[in-house]
Length: 70
Image 1 (cartoon, rainbow, N blue to C red):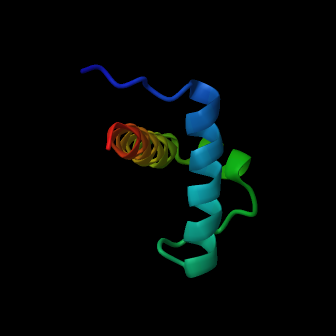
Image 2: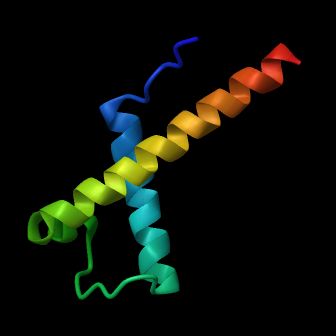
């Protein structure tokens, strides 16, 4: 069964939430005040953050589908 992939807008929104949580909990050192500055200064880091957000959204989609099928 194919699961729908999240849209780029959904991935971006989730990545921004993840970024803010990471800043709050100091999971990684960030010397910037905004997601935009982080995205410009660390392209690999933001790509990894988006990848994590995408996988989280896909896992949530699978869980939601499985809940409906029960």
